[in-house]
Length: 130
Image (cartoon, rainbow, N blue to C red; front, side, top):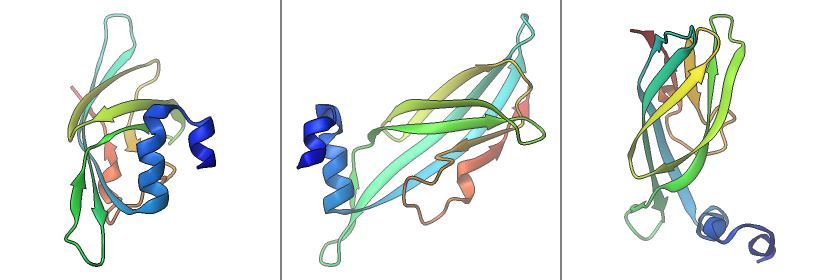
């Protein structure tokens, strides 16, 4: 496979899944909150659910191990981008933390819809101020 020649070895399994199987994702932002720090910045914390499964016509769906990077964006009240980072997610539940210079209002996981999901409505969440 040509992609294997140029991709790091730790991405080979993911490449094989994307090109040789039908993989469905379930990404969810469950909780997103923030607090203002003593320095005047904002500490944003979120709980992210990540799962994926392989679908097949002749076999019941099979859960796959989640171990891949995903992009998260944070926007302000005017929907202006204030943070865009790629984080590594392993397992089903991950706590993430960001520091921003502007007050955050909203968080989105997989904002560019790079993963196939049945329900993307839970990829976006308002950030609650503590």
